[in-house]
Length: 292
Image 1 (cartoon, rainbow, N blue to C red):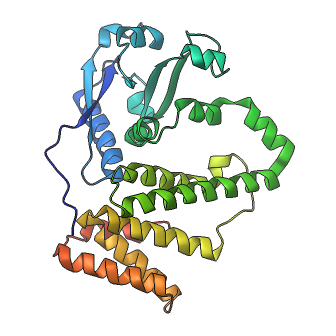
Image 2: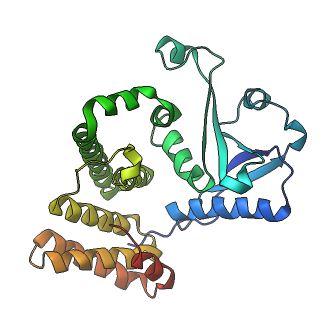
Image 3: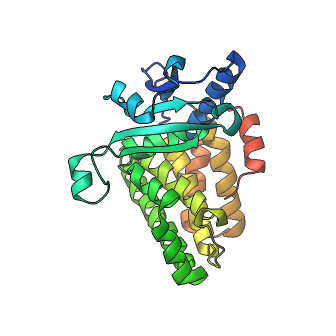
């Protein structure tokens, strides 16, 4: 059976307040960057960006803007820096009494906000709203002096251990939700995507702020490719067929007699046959530079 997504559902509208005098071309570019990020997660994005003109509010603080839209989560803010750095403010809201009690915030006036690349908005929205993470986790990585002190104390060997733990944890999350997806739970897709994105980021040296020696083992490399190829098949989006085929063929070259890999190759080939012709041009270009 091939999964055919519903292309006519109502999309999740994300509100962005425009607080600077930008040109039509600059606004078009903002929408373009948002679209790039949305479609990078899915060929059929479920989110859209709605920009509300509030240039007369340019003098207001982010806290004031949040108070004007108390039910909005998230509230995005486009300012005069956006055309130059491609960033947007992502505001989640004020701290709760529980946050203060648990030491996550100093007071109820603490505002959870972070500046991010416009292309990352959909990914982070999914992370915060679906994958049950919290913006404070990212704020901790960005701002916390505690991490700097820990790095200074533990040095490169310690960071390498953390990077390895981060990878194996997110890989286990992928594997767990892949089992759920295999049983028909399509709500698992967002969690698999989020964990995979964490895998990719965690392998980047600059993510940790210090060089370390940990690298994927050959077996971890194979497992990562296999899991994502299987995910593509179970997700069932036809335009992902070239990605899955390319990945599984790579694994067959590495392990030509591995039964699990050969079985997955048969399933992917059956998926490809059942889907019919697929335009591979866009994904051929992507695969040429794809880091696995």
